[in-house]
Length: 382
Image (tube, rainbow, N blue to C red; front, side, top):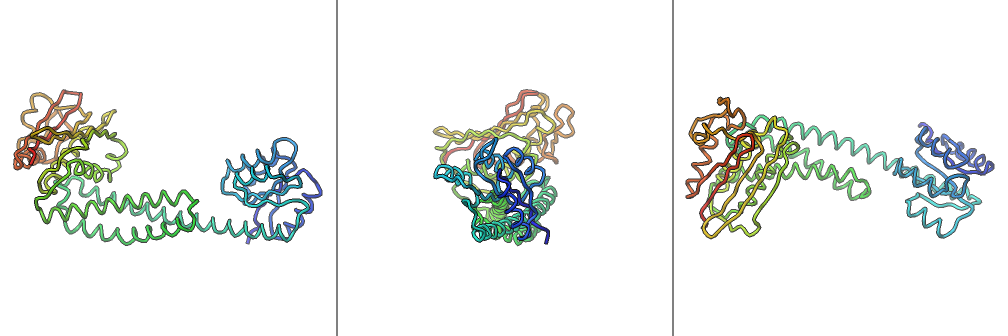
């Protein structure tokens, strides 16, 4: 086993010599400095696994030295060794999360015990970092698989009709995701101070939410029963689902204006998912290549109707094709005046209008060329 590098910072030559002999016998690779600034230079050059330092030295104080070391490498164990200890300096050292506090003259047995505990702490921290690295790799592989599979179905209209194949993908992702969740929970319980574990757990929870959302959509597509729906929640779930794609999540700004007093409406959840999913995907496609990409989602109501609108900062709709965008099989991808934002086969907006009409509602569009478009859905209150 390679010797563990340790840095001793003390202005007393006799102390340095005695500690060097003791630590070399204990199997350490010893580095020395006689004052704080030199100690920092050695620390940066050597990157030791352990530090032992006095508190009173020429130049910067021991407390200032510890603060700078913690800034450079917060996890390194620091053992304070001083012959001028006081309550205030001890409190300052403890506040900086030093590993141990030993007074001079040094009791070698006590020092050995402290070093052994520090070694064990280092081994444990290294083990945690290895676990984190493995979990990150596994999570990265899962995210890659997820994005790869999602891209295969991003053009499907609607996405809920991915059926058995998507169910198989979810099943394949579930086992490694469950393992990651279990391991992160265990590591977070054992080492709550390690922040990276929380990040991994957060991403795993997000993947679990995405899978849960897809599963819910598949169940809704199968049952197709009328139920009470929260239109705000429908919109939020559609946006959350589409954020599985990096373009929608990272490149598009979202602005929400939701009416918290919005009354519920009656409908089939899968049909409203199709309506707003199509409108959101259409808006996202319309903004590809634009410098500013922003979606504005709004809901409101009055005595007779519930309203929802989706606005984008795309190129808008040319006036000479605006009256045709709800026609079946009319695809704007073949129209030079508005070459982005179509639903592929030209049935997306037609399908949205037909679904809204079944509920006695209307869908309207307002657009100014080069200033975006706003699609508004108006539904009668129950």
